[in-house]
Image 1 (tube, protein in one colour):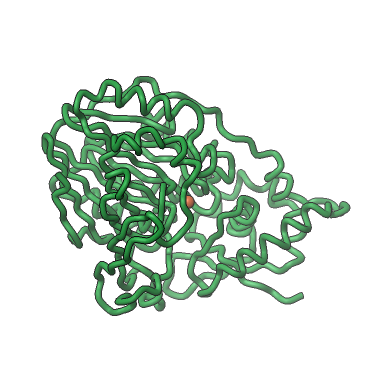
Image 2 (cartoon, rainbow, N blue to C red):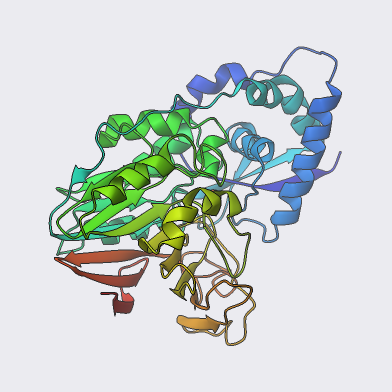
Length: 409
Ligand SMILES: [Fe+2]
C-alpha cells in the first residue's frame, strides 16, 4: 500500500517520553473495524492531505479527530529525521491509520471530556500602573519562530509584568505537547505574571493537560481572568471551551468588571476573533459581547486563531481597535494581497469590507522555515506598554525588532 506523508512533525525528543503512551501504541487485537471509525479516518486523512501543501513543514486543520490522529502519528509513526532540522517527519500508510483509528485514536476521541470549568477566584487581580505585557498567539509548536519569540521576551532589558499566550498548543494539546510546546518553551520572564488562554487545539483533547499545566506552572486557576490598575482593565476570555463562543458566566463577569470600572479602559484578549477581513467571523462570540460592543466599552481586543498579524482600524460601530497576533509560531502561508510577496517585511493595506474595518497586515518572509522562507509569513509578537492612562503598542519580529510602534492613547 502506498505510503503517504502527513503533516506530523515533531521535535527530536527523549524516547522515554513515549512511556506513558505504550498502551495506546500497542496495536489492538484483530477486531471488526467500526464503520464510524473508518469514515472519520478517511475524512481526517483527506483534510490533512489538503492542508499539507509543503512537505516537511508543519500544517494542521481545525478538526478534532484529524488533530488527534496527527498527535498519535507524531508519537508512533515511523519517523525520519529531516536534514538540518530539529524535527522528525512521520510517515504512515493507510493501513496504519485505519488500525490506529480502530484501536486507539477512535476510542480516545470517544472518551474525551472537557476539563472541569472553573470561575476566577476574584473579579480582577492587581496590576501595576506602569507595566509591560508580552502577547503572542498560536505559538505553542516549540518550533520555527516560537523559541526565538520566547528568547526575545526573556531577554527584553525592560522586562515584562505579564506574559500572555492567546492559545493553541499543537496538534491537540495532549500532555506531551503541552509539556514540550507550551511549558518547556515558555518565556519565563522574571517577576512576570504568566497566563495562557485556551484555544481550540487544546480542547481537541478536552483541555485537561493544558488546564492542569497552567495551574501547576503559572498558578492560573481559571481559563479566563482579569487584571486591573488605576487606568486599565485587561481581561482574558476563554472562547474555546465553547468553540468560538463564550462559555459560562463570562458575559456577566465582563458586565461586573465594567460596572466597577470607574473610568478604566477595557482591553480584551481571546483566542478567537470577533471579526476578520480574511477568515471567518465570530457571530456567537459577538452576540454574547453585543451590549459592551454597542456601548463602545471595549478599547482594544487582541486575538489569535488566524495565523497572521493584522492591525485593524477603529471599528466603525464599536470603536474598538482589533488586533490579530496569531503569528507566534505556527507556519502560515503569506496572503496573496496586492503589494504582498516581496522580500521585505512590511505591512500591506487591506480595505474595509462588509462592516469589517480596514487593516494593515504583516507580510514578509519567514527566516525560521529553512528552504521555504519566501512562502511563509513572519513570526512575531506584540509588546503593550502601559504608563498611567497611556498605552503604547509595539509590534515586534520574533527576534524583538520593532516593526511598528503606535501610541494608542
Ligand atoms: Fe485556533
